[in-house]
Image 1: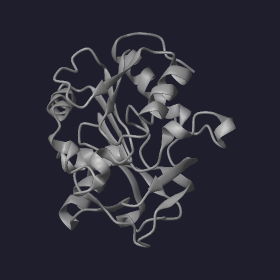
Image 2: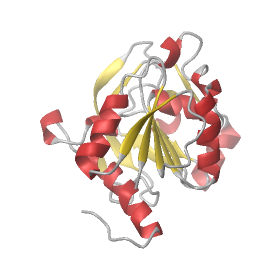
Image 3: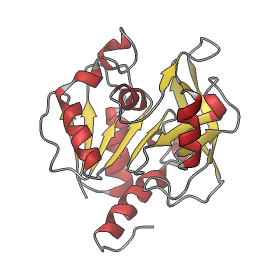
Image 4: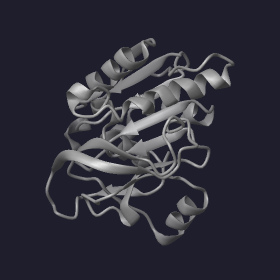
Length: 229
């Protein structure tokens, strides 16, 4: 399985994502610049956190127009796995690959600390190695993590089981405690917390490790290969 880690001007979690794949899975992984026009070689695309283009207009609003995002949309349509983390989640919503929007935290302050999440849907390719309802500790680091959508969109998210993670103690004012959602097909996930910063107990928690093993196991099942533990 081959992973791509997108790099935009201002990305600062790309190395974390790269190292998570390299250290946890030992699978091939490449940095891919925002001007790339071909992602056909990759099975999973990671859209990392940071401050793409400085977030000067609106988080993710400029990155949404980068050439590589056309290829991300194609990959999503082909059923490839797309994971957007923090700023990556914001980019995916701006690009229309996920519904809703991320607004300023209710406190109007940047929040950077561990948070407890509940696994609301463990049937996605990203969460299959977790238990339904399991509580996990994953760090956050964001100023615009307040998820919002209209009532009709929320109803669809709930009806289609697209709410994947919720906060146990909401740090940003997100609607119904939403921390992460997926598309209707389940192959595109966006989340504000950082699983790539939680893959080793040396970091305080390794609860993010199973997100990466989930992705690999889902891909291996799809291709008839043995799962990893």
